[in-house]
Image 1 (tube, rainbow, N blue to C red):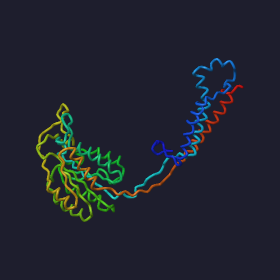
Image 2: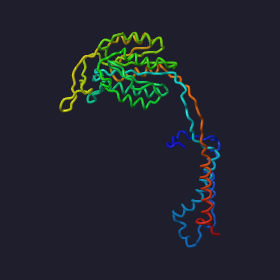
Image 3: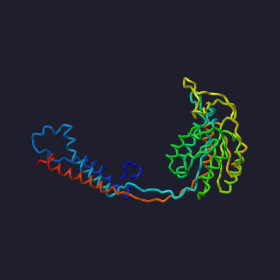
Image 4: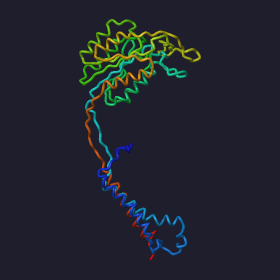
Length: 353
């Protein structure tokens, strides 16, 4: 049996036999109602007679009955055929392959998506939380993760291992790709290359950014979008941020981390981070997908929920049914109770005529 028991996997193959258990309390009630009195004494010597009215002795008088009824219960359970389901499911195909492309430019350190005073959270912090929830919902889909700034970085190849994916998602931080600019086209190229050769029924690239191409790329992102269309790849685009002047942590290229004062406090400044919504809308429209805009965590969560609704998985499973029969254990336990009842009735609880 598995090392970790999953109680919901226990089942009864022939549950109709369990109705026999109703007879046991009925027998007990009938015996008590009839006030059956046995003239024989359950003691091997007469010097114990004075103790017969004590509570401890009354309990001992019931031990043989308890063993007998327990034995009957176990035998009834045995003929009901208890089983432990060890069946396994193998995913033959899910129909959906997804690549998540996440912007890691310095603007992702902006604080305009924080949820209140005392809860300073960067855009990237919020994005990682929402994407993590999205990953958990797509249990049967292969998902890959790409980070990008000026150059793309493959964080995780497409996989069904959601735990591995979540660990790699937690690794995301500004500076991971060694640059701080934004190149949407490079992210599209990397994501499309990961999806192009796959034969899945549906291929999706979800690109999230809070800026525009900086520095301007040599090729328009639309070139990659047109290629995605030919390969039947949908590109959903998400623009995040308040589109107004906002507080942000200052990125330090030398340490590839947030710049800090000598006392350890983070340096905060106010800046504008314009988003090129037009190019994002054109990319999505050209691939028969949708463009979304989120200004806070709740809005971003709703967007991923909507994408989850639009792109449903069609899962094909191969089930290998294996049931471990547990009736030998129930039968053995019943026989142990019966043997104990017989032995104790002939020794400790021997009836004296």
